[in-house]
Length: 274
Image 1: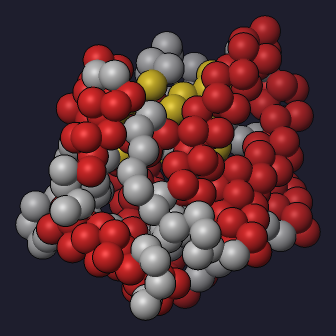
Image 2: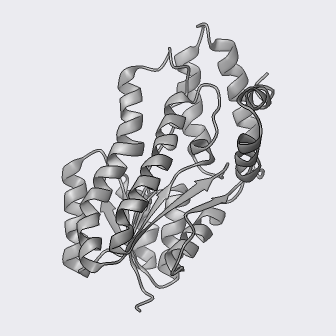
Image 3: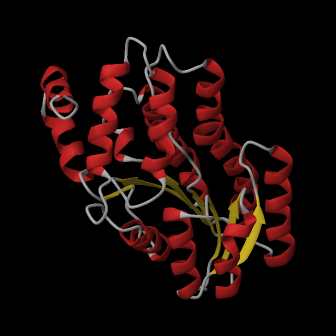
């Protein structure tokens, strides 16, 4: 079996996606990084990879990107669905337009790209779909309703897809990161504060923002490499695990959610945002 894989990874312009792409290139794979910000992927190209402009909400870019890989490589062995972001704020404060975009990127865009890749993997009778979920796909926090909804949806969607693709020798893997040193916290905070300023959820929002800043304090988070290592492990493994969990707070939070009652877990979460 050829150990060199053709990999397509979305959200490759920064954070976990970029780090994973660079690691997979270093390990000898043929890697196509996809993102809206092509200029942020110069290091991937310099390392020997390829950069694709791809907004996962734009169907024509998805179709063109997959077509380009197939024309150049003749196959796609691994799809890493990493692109995503978080909309935070009270349900009452978030517009339906923002809520729909959250789903468009985190679920529907991911699904559209997967659908474009799957016929090629079925023809190959082999492939791997690696979906980057979150510990937020198993737990919940105040003001995170729309983000958590997409990640909970991704968990169930991935489980169903795994059963559907089993006859075609296509693996589906879910990775659940905890708090990782990325742009994630910075991107979500200010819009959240702006949405709720002066409103009925202002006090709660300020408390959540404070807890988030403390969680993302410099030097206190897990490096992106902990997720890159798991992606690499899943790519290399002949029989990857269904789920991999890593990063600050991920394992303990998922454990607590499984063992505590809903009310008790509510109390644990709210104790952190006073």
